[in-house]
Image 1 (cartoon, rainbow, N blue to C red):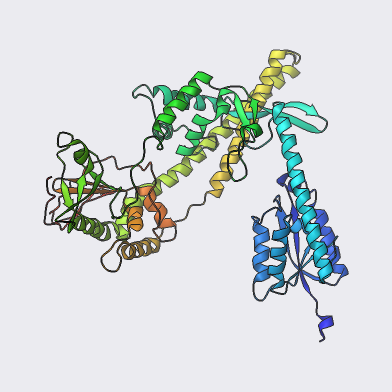
Image 2 (image 1 turned 60 degrees about the horizontal axis):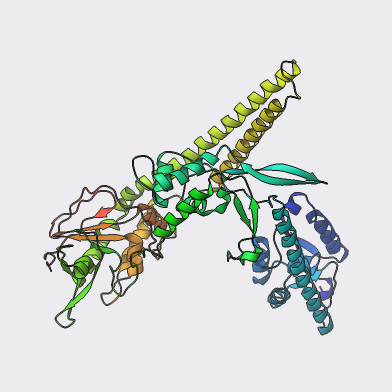
Length: 568
């Protein structure tokens, strides 16, 4: 067989810029039809089609694009030619276009355009690059015009799309040709939750004073007050609600770039919306949050030259323990920083030999925590909570569906009354009632569908006995270094607080952090974050010289130490 009779294999790459175009089949079917016709006319064997619905060509963060490139540079490549409708479907950045064209060419794969056929000589390469420059310029111009139109739409008080903030929903406000303009209105299903969050921040729940963000999160989850999607609240969600100016009637549009950087004030458009809370309440909450900001009140140190720096605390006063040396630097001790700064009237303090305590903590984690059966016992409650979380979502979905059904039945009764002549359709109050029931029904259905989708997509990785064994083995090996040192970052993935008292040590950690380290693939390389949930029960009193180890919950009792901490 001669080279001229070899049939080249082709891959078709189809792309549109927005999900809306993909939903309405604006361009994909036409690109597909022309691409298949092109391959047939030139004797190319179409072996694969890559469809990218709703992705910008200004960057390479496109799943199908990356899948195509990986296939194209593999050896041997499954196709010889990549066919696109135009080079702009492939990339709208001239540098990136040339980068990927050359990357494919190195593996013998050629990029061809249906509407811009080019050769391989220098003249055609230059023409392709000029076309790419024009595509890039056009893309930037289009983006500039789009953002200008969106800003003008916002200035007129209309919503530019995306999911509204919790507590609001979109309603049709005006018809302009075929386009329906929308505005935000208060969502009666969730606005009360927003007001509750602000009330808790300012006044507490009646039994406590002002609440911080973490306490508000705990209160909402403890009282089974769900998010809009039926899930549990998190710190980030509550903090956004407490800092978002939308809730005082000023929604800020065009505030950040795609990389989340703040834009100049002149670029931000303030859209008036119905306020859920008043400005005085909002301003007061901002002052409270600023006072609690860790940049104002620094968090505990989590880095340093020693293994337990930032983790170790004096159990007598709760203060951090720092390093003190003795005998010209030959000996090093962990000592109470409160006593060092404020004297013995603040805390009687203690000093613990650093090398002995480091070895004690590392050994106890190895021998007591890092056993598969112990890990299974500790994580059982966390795994149960994951299932409980899914069950709560299912309950929330059922409640939303029930609300939608009730609204539908009420609407039916109103329609029956109108048909029988009992009610007058022209009555404004009746119209408002019908519109309100429709809105509640539609919102409940939309929330139920969204919550159902999240429930289906939250597939959680099962924890198997083999995973526990692998994790325990890897963690035991990772804590210690050759020569007697320790891997501090690995230890901190297991324990986040060590408290030292006279004759006893408590080692504590977060079950959720332990589970995260486990399901991350058997490795432990995370750095502890702020806001950890500490063990509530203090039912174990480990002694330094205790001959046996038994402990409850996630708290360990160090063993095998023969000397007590020194008083200072």
